[in-house]
Image 1 (cartoon, helix red, strand yellow):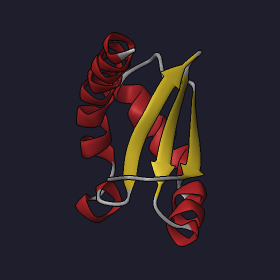
Image 2: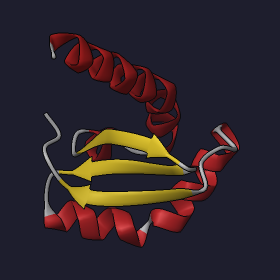
Image 3: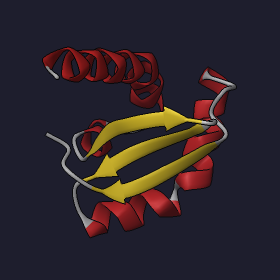
Length: 87
């Protein structure tokens, strides 16, 4: 069981590292403090957001953020924001 947890954590760390650089170029420092990469699957980057106000704010900017991210990485086809733990 511990092996599977470690493997899952390594996968998530790789995903975070791969996309966090692109996110840092696109989002402000303040916005970065309120999100966390959850996972990437089938072209969709899923992000946790720490509050409903940040969820609303980022959804308003979703198309702009997505276009900027696609300049950095063509594999990103969609962004999905959900409220979750960002620690």
